[in-house]
Length: 135
Image (cartoon, rainbow, N blue to C red; front, side, top):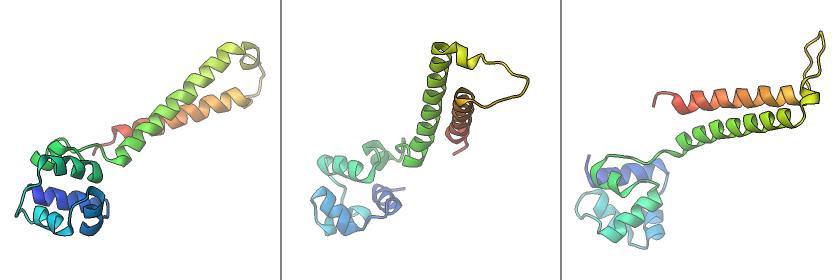
């Protein structure tokens, strides 16, 4: 795939018109059109601006490799991190207040700690599934 096709693809992925992209990086719409049709290759300064505006790396625009992590993938990792944080909070609370966590009963009860642990494990599981799914 050519540089122009990668620019066009990235622009379309974020639903931005040539005009809007031109405004974002302070060039003319015709410049964007020429880049996308491979008539002209953007200079270094414009490559950097394009990469920032399109949320991709300069390397990806030039060579097609190492496309930046998509926002969705990043959010999947955020879910995992939130789950880990909840789990650590629940462990700290259980260590800090062992008398509440050690209440025994013949019936399973759900107090605040057990609900927090359950929710944190569930969030971590969802985060792991989302972060590790096949791309």
